[in-house]
Picture 1 (cartoon, rainbow, N blue to C red):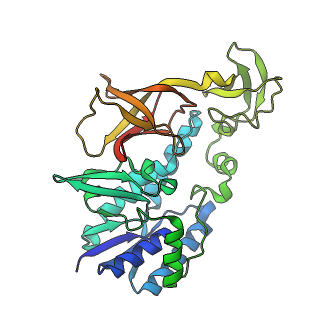
Picture 2: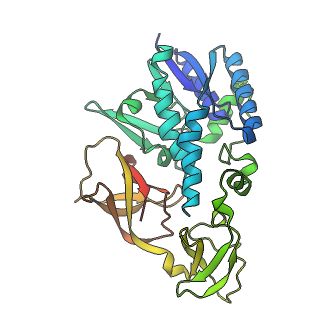
Picture 3: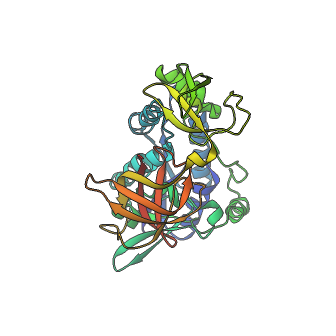
Length: 348
């Protein structure tokens, strides 16, 4: 009997994944990541309790693994540093890269497992010995954007039991099977920020991030004062507390001078982006003559683009049409149809 190591968060998706794997005849072992910090201890205590309840109900082994130090170093630390630079990072990208797949995949040998599994809404296929990551057939729930850093060996060993399902079907399976968390709400928040209160979290861990500074227009004219760059992101229009008599948007965040720059919406549009820390999942190198599609944030549309490698190892992504609010430290993900080619972090 093949053994599968399931990342069990105590939510509906991972719980149904565990149930389906057991039903398919796998020996299922569940592990829950303890990533908790002092201000979110209650979040993780409840998550671990729910995962234990589900495991007991399904009759599978359950283990809690302590990744707190790794999580602080590789997820929370970079998140804070990027905000201090006036950037808008995506911590789920850091976590999937360094914790949910790297550390989790490494656990296979400790549990003598043949596969790993998660509750992500993505699909995969294999062709000529190469493994490919695909968007979920359920485009509304597709999470492929977050997994562009997955490595070939990790993808080869990965199973995504609910990957092609509609969320309503996932919940229906959970309810019909009597899984204790079938009616648990989906998490909408960053897991390490209590009550989605960025301000409280960033103020606790960074003194630099809440310093007052000036709001200016692109000519240098002072328009007002801000109470910390952590309250702003590129493209923001609401909450600027500046009366200009016309619509204005955050077009630049200058951490060196601690300034917020406002401008008209047309200043937000660019046709190129530069990305670093690039991972190509199933190819050795990008085809510079090919037209791919790419998206500059999770909820943005796929847009046609060509990609060129630069001498310094970064890549320039040239879109056919201008893109709105390309934001530093967000991830740009490249697709070939439904297949995830890879991606990188936006640096320009």
